[in-house]
Image 1 (tube, one colour):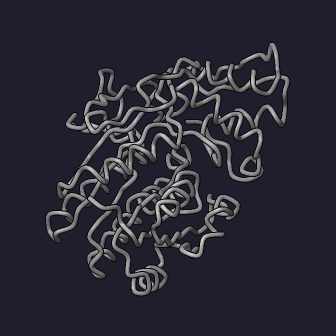
Image 2 (cartoon, rainbow, N blue to C red):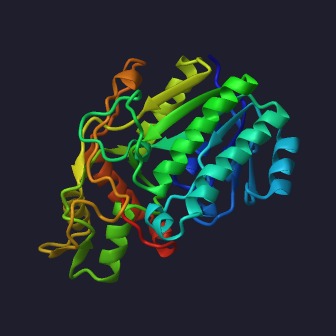
Length: 328
């Protein structure tokens, strides 16, 4: 299957979205990125902006007029829908946040695709749809019982994507992301720990007991998997887990951050409990047989991805100056 040539990326100035812009442009695609810059940064699009095949639109895709203008003028053949609420903890306090930013953004994009005849959707879903599951999780696991509003909204969005695919002759690639790290981080545990230690290098507060254990995937490995699956799978609905096949504890992340910042003997202060907050899934493991059957293998272990992300964030700390701290 040939790669799409005229692409819309929602959330295109964000962490993963901006890396997608760079990769797709490098592959010869025409790319339009839309972002309201509530979390994304124009700095993330510095390289993309040098390419004449790139267009950036600042706007809220929940605004019907903005969305209509984007789709009527863009003539896209594919949409990579990355936009969503990325602050899961805040979604627990503001219970309509994920309804709007995670679910309704997806619905609006789907309906615009239907109206303007755009056939292909790549969707950023999440491990959060599975809830608290002890065993290794494959894509057919059920019943799905998410424990966060974010996971619930992603789950609902997946269901709507399935319905649109079957009702309107679309195709979709649903990727259930793990914790993703790399340069341009705007949130998450690595971002939080670095920001804390820059403000006060004498101690580090860690939500939960530090034994939370999750796969962390380097952003380039994620995009490799996304594009490979997009090329090799052509069913109307394609759903895949993507993750590193190793995991890292939150305590180990704290140790790596301290090591890379040259801080020795930093006391860790744990807030207690198995999870960092209500809705946090403290441990999960993916079955990766489906994505690996396509020939994909992550180039970095979970620990390596964390260390590389810490180094890149310390070299380019612009994203540490804004946005609320949150921890995966």
